[in-house]
Length: 123
Image (cartoon, rainbow, N blue to C red; front, side):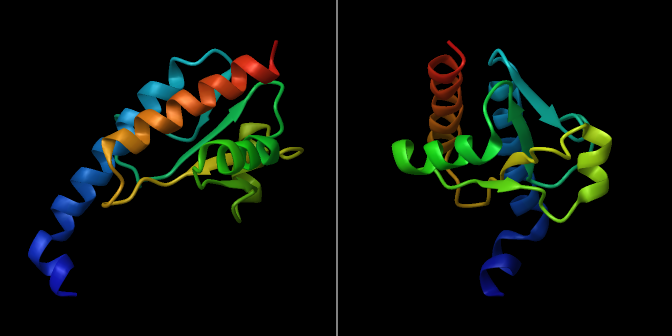
């Protein structure tokens, strides 16, 4: 509680939102990546859901964990209507959630890893 009061909720949210926008920008430059949900200009939480064409989200999450040491979640994330709207009811999506202690280098690493997975598995 002291930490949150000292940093303030507004500064914590601002940092997480900055990291989220950076992640979305990086992922959007990768061929075959489709971001789900509202764009970065919309007030949002620090959650980025995406798919990678031709790669099952569970495989993407597995490879990010095993080959790159990056923890993400795959699946439906308790939002079946969201997946119905996004057209991902068959596969789900990958979800990354930058937090206050996430470093900019973590975002760069995730983007590079997704790009490498896409280049490797889509060729």
